[in-house]
Amino acid sequence: MHTSGKVLAFLVVLMAITASVLTAKLVQVRNSWTAKSVASKNKYIDLSPKIVALQSQIDSLNSELFRSRELWGFLPVTTETAVMNPADGTVRVGFGSDAGLRDKLLMHGFEIDANGASIYRGSFMPVEIQNVGATLKPNWRATPEEVRTWAPGNWRWRNLVPPSYVDNFDKQLTAILKLEETLADRVRTLNGQVKLLAEANAKLKLREAELVGGDELPKTQSVEREFRDGLVAANAAAEEDRNQTLLTIDKLRREVRSVQADIEQMLSENIELTSKLPQPGTNKPVVGQKNESSVKK
Image (cartoon, rainbow, N blue to C red):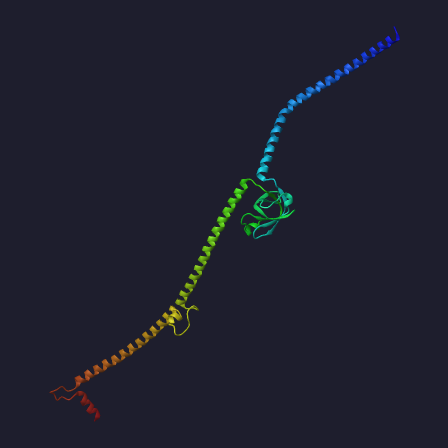
């Protein structure tokens, strides 16, 4: 055989061996990829329900995010808040035009307590806007009693809130205003009653003074005693005068009776003496005169 034929035969054998080796590796790689494909397909089949559930959750969260942005606004800020005027509730906040705050943009404040819970404090309107700060004033009539309950510190501010917050807040404000009006009416009524009570007490004191005397009555001597010392003192004085008069009358009556008794006694004696006088037409001496003549002898 020619030398080139031998070389070609050797190359053919060598290529056959190489092809066999490569074919074996190809079969091995194909089997490996087939196994991976089957495993991936099974894994996809297993994960498909989870993918659907996660996609549904993503859609729900996107909807919630949309609703949140629609209900709670695009400007949520948590910053240091301080009360500047306790009389009307004016506050100072740490954000301004840098955070998108602009004129007539209504902001809603939530006080955050130590436990992280938020308390809705109402709506506020900007009155002064700076780059990194602003002054806000309540969009309603805040009372000093309510402002005293506000704690300075971190507040959360939003440009929109759900209608339920505003409705509940408006209902509470309406109830507070009704209570304030009722309280004002009660205070006016009470003041009127106090005034009437004071006038009644003054009149009662005057009437008591008219009865038992007092500083409310005039003390001039030209006024009748009952208007100067009181009716009781005047009645007591009149009663004392009456008693003295009764005593005087009783004394006079006794004297009259004594004089009348003396007169009656004298009349009796005169009648007795008269009966002893000589009667007309008789010369009989009077016994009394006889005795009197005998006594004289």
